[in-house]
Image 1 (cartoon, helix red, strand yellow):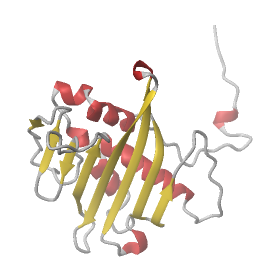
Image 2 (cartoon, one colour):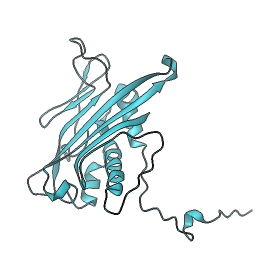
Image 3 (spheres, rainbow, N blue to C red):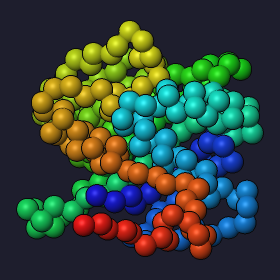
Length: 209
């Protein structure tokens, strides 16, 4: 599975950024151009799949330093991925994930305003829904046959964590939504990695008998 497109709006210095990365990418730019914020956006998406979105917002000092220009009312991430299946003749399949965080007034708090996970299958009267659909008032999770699962949200922080991170049934954990969750949660973002001549990463490993 790989990223084929990511669209970020209202996050830190990234007012409206659309990026279509390749298999290997080198991001170059002057200080303050948004390179680190791009990594932070990827990290935030990964943490949202692990149920640690609320912790990250608190760690960053609340919503004010996270929203663009300190005043934008919401942050949105749209992620499109592609996977190839050798079992199906190496056919490709795209998955679209959308997450929108709404700042609550001028406070540091937020709620998840919208969340959608769409496996790209064509909409028909028999299959009218995406895998996950959530708005301010309701959350719904469906399997591939459009059977609806109940979504059990905890009483604490239910507006602050994604449905994607709260999949519980065996089907959800092994189905396309569960596989996407595992992919997103597996990301590891390393920032501020020291690579100077005396940095630990450059030291030779020492083995002892």
